[in-house]
Image 1 (spheres, rainbow, N blue to C red):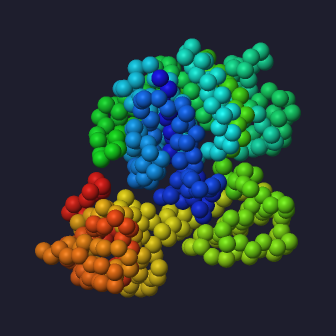
Image 2 (image 1 turned 180 degrees about the horizontal axis):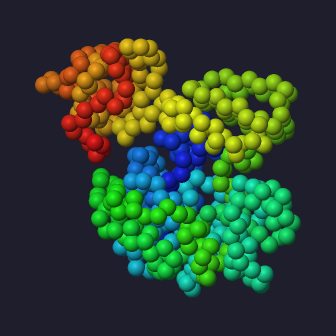
Image 3 (image 1 turned 120 degrees about the vertical axis):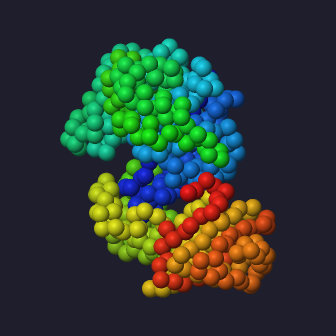
Length: 468
C-alpha cells in the first residue's frame, strides 16, 4: 500500500520577508489560492487509499499543519512532531516506522511540502513508474531534466542504459555555474527533486547498514512517542541523539540500489524569489505582479504587495516584496543570497525574521497595531468554539473591546458575555480567559498597559492545546 510521507520541516529563509521561522513558505499561498502544503495534499489525492498519511513537521508549526489538513478534508493523517531539527533522513525514518505500525507492506512516497509541480498527470505517471521499481526493492529518486544551468540544485547522474528507470551513477552537490552548464550540455544529469519512493522496510534496512546510530535513535523516539491532541510527539531526548543528515547523504549516495525516474511535470522547489518569478503569471514585459502594485516602464521583475500600494518605475530584473513590517528590494540574480541577509538579521536580534506582525495561534491570531514604551494595541481574532488559555500576567493589564461577534470572559471568579461595542478590563495579576462561544469569528481590540509587554509574561494554568 502506498503511504505518502510529507516533510514539512523547512524554514524557507530565501523567501523572506514573506516566509519566516514561525510561518514558513509551505503554509503560504505563493502560487495561487492555496498554500504549497495544501497543493501537495491535492496532488496526491488520486493516489490515496484507505491508509495513513504521515506528516513530519516542526512542533512549532503543528497547529498550522492541523488547520490546513482540516481545510483539505484530510482526517487520516499522522502528524509526527520533531522536537529538534535533524534534517530529512531521520524525518523519513520516523515516517517509515510510523507507516509500518499500520501497513506492513507500506511503500513510501516521500514529498517535500513546499514544491511546485504544475502537471499533476505527468507527476502521477512518474509515480507509477517509481512504484514498480520500489516494489522490486529499489530506492527510487525522481530526477528533473534541467532546463538551464542552476547552481542552487543538486544533480543526479544516471547510468547510460536503456529504459525510463535507470540506476544512479552518482549524486553531485550544488555545483558552480560553469560545472552546471557542463552537466546540462552532457544530457546525462538530472536535477535532484528531493522526491523519493521506496518500501518502508527496504529504507530501514539500508539505514540499519549505513547509519545504525540514526536508526536506533529514531526507533527509540518512535517507541517512546506520546499522544498530544491529534499529534504524535517524538521522544525529545531520543530524537535529539540522532545524527543530522539528509536522505541523500545518509542513504541514497551510498546505497547500491538507487535508481532514478525522470520527472517532467513542471517541477520547481521555489527556493528563491527568482524561482517564483519563473513559475508565476508574467505580463508582456516579463513582470510577475501580485497585490496592490503599479508597475511602469519595468521588466523581468517579481513585485508583491501584501498590505499597501507599491509603485515601481524604470527598474529591471528586480525583486520587490512588501509586508506590513518589512520591505525587500533585491536584484533577481542575487536572490540566493537572501539567506545570508536573514542570518544577519538573526544575529542582530531582529524579530522580523522570526514572525509576521500577524501571529497565528491555535485559537486564531493576533496582530500588532501600535506600541510605545508602556502600552501596545492588538487586533485579536478567535475562531468559533476556540478559547485562549486560562492565564495571568505579572506586568500588564488588558482592556478588551469587542468589535465583532460574542465573547465569553472569565475574570477571577466572574464569567460573563460581551457583545459588539462592549468591553472588559482585566487588572494586572487577575486570572482570566477569553472564549468564542459563537458561530462567527470573534474580533476584538486589546489595549495592554504596563511596565513589560512581552509575550513571555504569561503564566498558564490550563490550556486546551497542550502548551506549557
